[in-house]
Length: 218
Length: 218
DNA sequence: TAAATATTTTAGATTAGCCTAAAAAAAAAT
DNA sequence: ATTTTTTTTTAGGCTAATCTAAAATATTTA
Image (cartoon, each protein chain N blue to C red):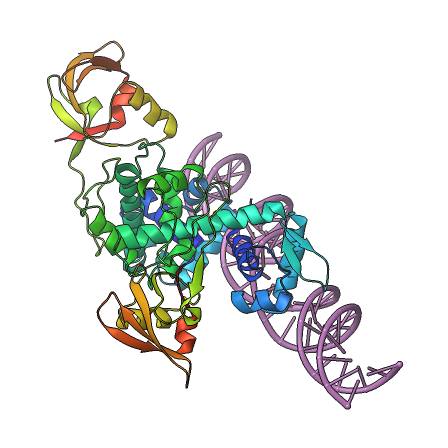
């Protein structure tokens, strides 16, 4: 059985390793969890004892099979709760992360099964990220960044690379939301900004910095 | 800000004091929370420092106004989540307590407001207990125990004094549920057991011990 | 490749919440 | 009104998760 805190470490390691592909450094973990590197070292020893990470001192960590499975279950819970908060409780997508951070740690064999059923077995969370199934499997997103889309390219907003409240609020303001239909109208070479049409109506000009963080289908 | 554990202490004190009416002893608290009296003494000092209880050594405790307000908010959250679990996720009423014990500690100003709205502002939880409003006010139950009901008395099952899974499972077995219509057919003087009719159909004989724990309207 | 810098770990404290054992206070019994 | 019993508190320790400061290791730079 893992504690609340141990679960957060596993989740952080999973995300930092890009779905369990690379090694993760102590400093990187300490940064995302806002703890000191010394605290991370302590915890890594504990997690290695519990066989959820592979840990060689001074060499970074990777998740074991068991650890990856645990991490994916937490991510599954997080994303299902986010769907609940947005679809059922009518929260905006920029308001749900913090609450889901708490809800993801609720322990119950049946709760998530029932929640999944209640929500109609959703495949994606409100930010477009795929929801792992009970076995930890998920369909990776086939998405390209808006900044890489060619002129005339049309697609559906499926996800974001950046999810800070400030960014989400900006998107709301220019009427970009998950599921919105966007079309690249023009690319301004001068500053790499992009002119887009949203839902066949309004057009907006977004900076390359913003476009990089918007993911669309195909 | 109260910790998870501090919240559980306040809730325990509230229930043990019968809605904040009597003093509560250290031993009583230690029993319901399954901790040692020494641990309770430690915590009571801490809670007194936070001005949520009135505490005089060796004399038991009462909740302050602030403490009572906190306790009622936790109870509100607990009961709203129980309604969610039974009404929306289709759990049985004997399965929800443990999960609600975890959910009641989720911190969010808006979450409970939205949940309340989503559930249609319910007045009672699945066990028939009233749900406090945002100000901690609740309508006390006007209920009598089935063991005190006179012969021929008819009523609706509105609540239970005992909510252990074993008891709830027994009730399910004899088809007594919240909202069931019950009628006292006969009272057996020999052992104080009661013959009841349920929903106008089946009759069952319940012991006085069982009848004492079933609350009906009027 | 040796020195400088950056990263990571260890050592030793701290806080929350719990424990056992012993002391102190209150309540009950003789 | 003592003595006995019960209840409650204090004293001293433990574990989980954190911290700071110092030591050890790895990496980068000259």
